[in-house]
Amino acid sequence: MIKYCYSLILLFFAAGLQGQITDPKATEYYTPVPPKVQAGEHVNTPPSDAIILLGEDADPAEWVSANGGGPVEWTREGNTLTVKPGAGAIKTRRVFGSVQLHIEWRSPNEPDKEGQGRGNSGVFLQERYEVQVLESHGSDTYTNGQAGSLYKQSPPLVNATRPMGEWNSYDIIFNAPVFDTNGMVVRPAYVTVLHNGVLVQNHFELKGPTEYIGLPHYRAHDDGSIVLQDHSNKVSYRNIWIREL
Ligand code: MG
Image 1: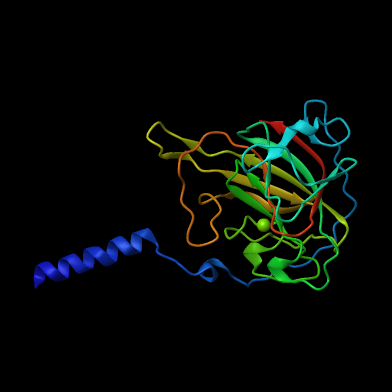
Image 2: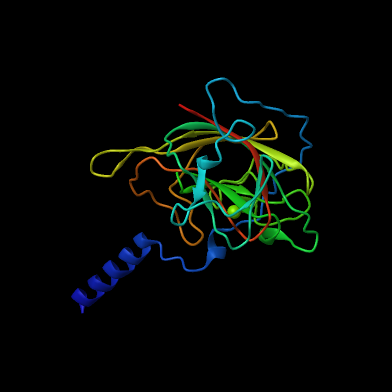
């Protein structure tokens, strides 16, 4: 009997360690709500040492389909790329470690949609760590899933999202995680984000890759692409440039 109890305790302990969360809602929270601020004019043009990923001088071949590496199927108008729902995510041909990334995005006009269904996309650093893109000016959702959040890990300090249809910018400083040869974390990843020039993430320590369900935990990886998410909304992107740190 004692042996049985001991086994049962071990089993519960192991289950606890695994953090067996099956409900996505378990990692979504709604308070406190980041206060709204109206961002000022913010223009940030690329310095001479930046790699232009999307813009006037960019090589269209900088982006490929994230699934298979084929040509991008999103809608290209001038220097703007717009999600083609169902076409899937796109990624940079190059891979990166720690970077400074500037990116501009615009939510489509979707007044009939709300929450995670309105203007959803995302900027994934090293293919794993999502800075959420969402129409968060006129629609609410869980705060750690709104625009400027590190999805399901950290809500933005304030809500600086511009109204639907207007261009937004992110300036992201990403310090890639460092792993030792055994795959252990030597240094976690840190992210700082300015949204339309307003600080919304202040050197936040990521707990691991973005997870929709359950708690994040690190797994060793190499440098990775920047990925832009297809979440079925026609979100547009322009003026993307990057500096390797
Ligand atoms: Mg997203």
